[in-house]
Amino acid sequence: MKKLSLVMMMALGAFTFQACQNSGSKDAVETADSLNTNTDTSTSAAATDSGTIADEDSKFSTEAANAGMAEVALSELALKKSTNADVKAFAQSMIKDHSAANEKLKALATTKNITLPAVVGEEEQKVAADLSTKAGAEFDKAYVDQMVKDHDKAVSLFEDGSKNVKDADLKAFATETLPKLKAHKEHIKTIKDKMK
Image 1 (cartoon, helix red, strand yellow):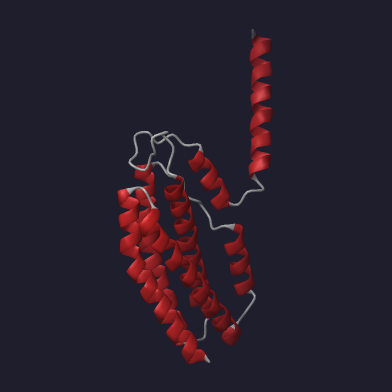
Image 2 (cartoon, rainbow, N blue to C red):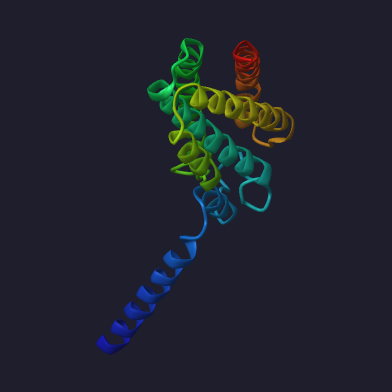
């Protein structure tokens, strides 16, 4: 019996090790999406008839969390590196607004049994690494360009979410957050125009 237990523990250990090795190649967003696909949420309002999280809900939630965390991280970098008062003020509002939205989404995800990424995705990490190599006016231009691009994507994501998300609470979150994202988008485009 002891030999059988030992063999079973070794097999389980090998399986766990292999699973960890394979998941290392996924980024945080893909990992969260994968976990959501396999989660039973039959007690959650975000569940479909089959008991799994609606694809639209988990996809929206993980992408929104990733985008929000990226905005905060890049804006914290901007507070340290920017030489432009408008950029610094914008970055400060990004940290405040996106941190609040991130916390609200995190609370919703917890109640809906949706796994969110713990860190930003690989693409966003590369953007941050690239921005961190820049300084002065070069940094400001790159940060502003990235914020324009990110807010174009975020507005599109939240417009989609407000229409296609199945869960009423997540849909309300998308709908309530959208006007602030549109305001951010207009604000950063104004800053970009001033810098030309």
